[in-house]
Image (cartoon, rainbow over all chains, first blue to last red; front, side):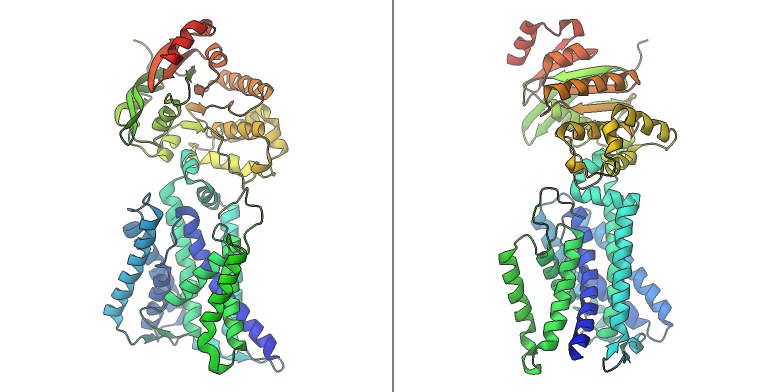
Length: 295
Length: 238
C-alpha cells in the first residue's frame, strides 16, 4: 500500500514539475531563451500569498496570478525585449542576472527568514481510501496539472495565437514575413508561462509553505533538468521530462532510507547523466528529427 | 502624368557588414504588372527582396509602396501593408498541416471580406491543397510545397507578390506548371516581382525583366528580347 501511496505522491509532484517545464518550454520555443528567472515568478507568487494570509483564499489566488503575470510582463519588456536578437549566450547570462537581481530584491524587501503561507494549508489533510493515505493537495496538483496542460494544448492547437506561436517556434523569421506579430506572440508566451508559474506558486506553497528569496530556484532547476532530459525542442517531450524528474524525485526520495535522503539529488543527477549519454537529444524526443515542431 | 508605381525601389543599397550586396538599385513595378529580376548567384536578387520585406536594413535609398516609404518598417508590418513574399526554399511549416499553413497566411490579410471566394480560387489553382488539407505539409512533394508557399502568400490578398526563385529544385514539368499558375495569378490582377535564375523563361514571361550582376542592375529586357543571348551573356559576365 505504501507503494501506491508513493506512486500517487510522485505523480502529483510530477504534475507540478510538468507545469514548470511547460512554462520554460513555451518561452524557449518562441525566443530560444532558457529563462532561469522563471523561479522568481514562482517566488513572487509565494510572497503575494504569504502577504495575503488572513484574506479569503480566492483573493490570495487572484492577487498571486495578477502579480506573477505583471512580473512576467516586466521581465519580457524590461530585460528580454531589448536583448532580442542578441547571442544565445548573452540572453542566457541576462536571465541569470535577472534571477539574481530579483532574489536580491526579495531579500531586501522581505528578509532572509522567510514568510509562511497558511491559507490553503487544509489541503494537506489526508483522504483515507482503505489503508492508503492520500493528501488532497496531491489530487488537486494532479487535477490542476491535467487541466492546465489540456488548456495549453487547446490554445496552441485551436486558436490563431496558438498557431502563430507554433509557427514562430518553428521558424520565427518566416512567421514574421507572413505577418505574425513578433511582440504579440512573445508577450503571449510570457503571459501563458506566467499563468503556469502562478499555479505552481499556489500548489507549491501548500506543500512547502515557507517562502524564502530563493524559493522558486530549486523547483526551476529540477524542472529545467527534466526539460533537457525530455527534449527541449518539443512541448510534449519537455513536459514529460519535467513530469519524469518530479516523479523520480518523489518516488526515489520515498524509497531511500531516511539516513540517505541527502543523496537524493546525487541519485537524480546520476540518472540524468546516464539518460543524456544514451539519448543526448532527450529521452522523449522523436527518433527521427526531420520535421521537428518545437512548440 | 504617369501612374504612380505600386512598388518602387530608389537607389537601394544593402550591405552585410562592410560588404555590399545591392548597389544603387532602382526599379518600379506598376499595378497589375509582372516584373522579372534575374542574374547569377550572388548578384543581389534575394537581398533586394529581403530589403523590400524589411528583413535586412537599407544602407541607402528608399522603398515606396503606393508612394509611401516602407523603409525601417518591421517585416510583419510590411506584410500587413500588402507585400507577400514566397521565400526561396519555400519555408513551409513542415510540422503543421496544409490548412494550418494556409491559415498562417491570413495573419497579413486586412479583413476577412471575400475570404471564402479567395479560398475557393486558391483551391481551383492548387487542387492538391484541398485534397491534402489535413496532411502534414512536410509530407508534400517539392512541387506541392511550392504550391502551398504560393497559396499561403495569396491568401493574404497582397497588393504585391514577391517570388524568390519559385522554380528552384523543381523538375522541368513542375516548373512549367508553376509558371502556368503564375500566369493565372497575374490574370487575376495580382502584381508580381519575380526573382528567377531561369533567365529566358522569365524574360519571355514578364512585362520586363531586369538583369542584376555583381550587386548592380545591368540591363532591362522586354519579352521580345528574351532570346537575345548575346546581350544577356554580356550582362551576366560584365
